[in-house]
Amino acid sequence: HGYKAQDTCKTKEWPMCTDDDWGSKCPSGCRVQGLMDKADHDIIKKIEKIRLLLDEGRKLYRSTDQVSKNTYSYLRERLTSSAGNDNRYTTLAEQLRQRITDIKIKIDRQLRLLDALKSQVKDQVVVIQRL
Image (cartoon, rainbow, N blue to C red; front, side, top):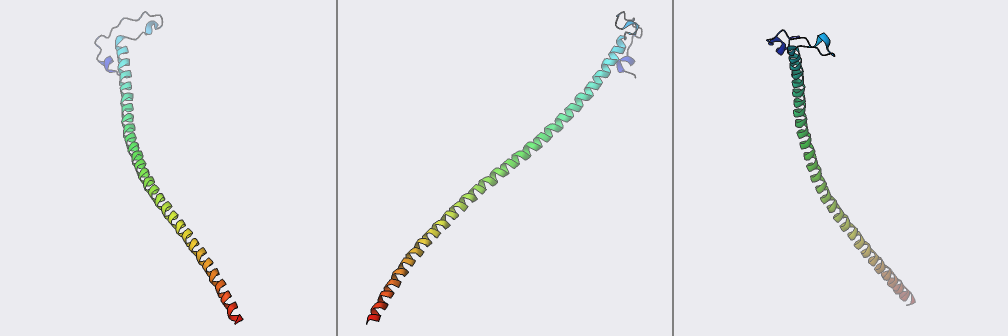
């Protein structure tokens, strides 16, 4: 694996580390710089991927947000017009009920009148039979 910093490193002879944890395998400055460059490169790739995902998420959010707003507006409009239709239906039903009540009252009057006329006819028949 060639790392940019390692390839361009001018000093090839770094003194060995004396750190007890690393012993004689302590990395040189060029090696450390190369590892850091590789880690930076990997992190930059991940950041770019995250940015792309965020952009996609924003687009999807805007799209979803717009669809939900349109749906809300459509449903609100439909419910409002349905409420108007319901009010109209209620009004028509009330008018029909009132007309039915009026007709029942007229029928009752007509039946009473008919009974009165029957009674008069009976009385007249009785009078005629006496004569």
